[in-house]
Length: 272
Image (cartoon, rainbow, N blue to C red; front, side, top):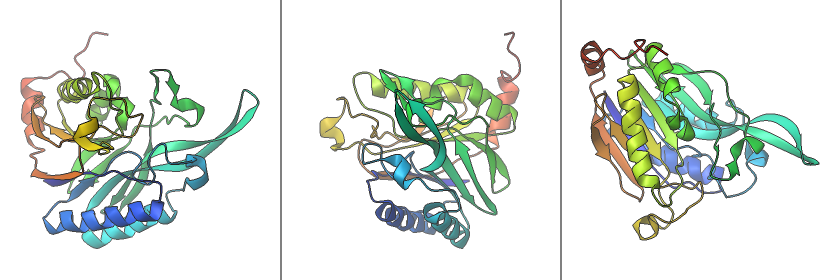
């Protein structure tokens, strides 16, 4: 199956971000890609304003236009967005929380995965403004089952194993991975480890690094480190982008997963 991993740097303007997605999607589809994976927060970048004010349901304009585009191009598009969730009281403040959602649309599907593991780490509490999801999501591309996770989920191997047990041969991973000391080595290690844990392809699309390579290795907040990647079920990195905007287009063999799982039958074999 031919895939496109599209590493963009989204901004504050949802319509402008839509335009960039549409342009790149047409280019990728013209090159034969059937699965197009975009970063977390593709609709609106973190740090560009109140997410709750611009959050949309998956029948709203952002998701609706991507649905039309995916059906026109006969592809599946995965892209990060934000949807309204609930209202909570925190320290005397009323907060309208959102879902950090990965939209999956195309080939007769239109659904959203709500990020399960909120980024409550490194002195930051995403759960203050983001409602954690609860359900695993799988979808179909060209008759193959894939799963979906978002960014911080990559630190939780059980989720990836559960998706593989549900039949996923590949797991798409939209991210906005924060840059900083040791963050790139962690990213590379975690994506390889998750591929090995669940003997599946990992297809990870990250936000491009603001400032590019010049700023690489310094703290960026949750605005991206780039380095989108594709990792095979043996943990080998078969493609990786750099810090800047880029598109990886490549063919992956999802059937190889069956061979790997036969040789390395780790799914369901644990004792704990």
